[in-house]
Image (cartoon, rainbow, N blue to C red; front, top):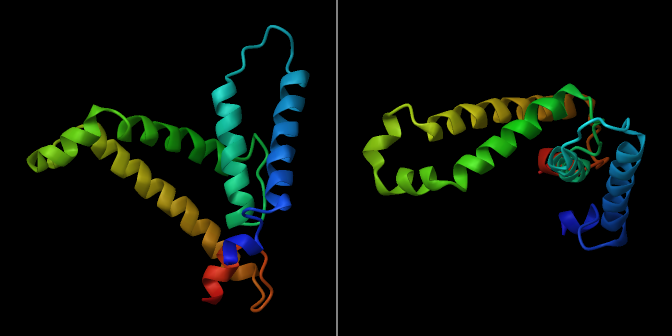
Length: 142
């Protein structure tokens, strides 16, 4: 119910997605000719901004420190989890203590957890009980 209140399955979610697409096309049009651009990063940041608009009620600019830190790390974790290391991790529990790639994934997850905890802390400081801005406020009220 709460997700529906913040746009899931509604026209407002479509508007958020179209807004991010508009930002991507503007960025690509303004990009100087001959300058390489990685579209994966643009789409990852757009996806993360849509999620953040629901969770935190705001979007982040491409140059924002939070976005610059978290998106590459989430991409790296996805590569590790979708690779053979995830199966090895599950099949051979004794290997979990060796310095293999999934150890790096745990370190990255802890860093991401701290970044998100900082966002929640900022929300706690700025929130007004009863005035719900986003999903984080709903969680804090609960």
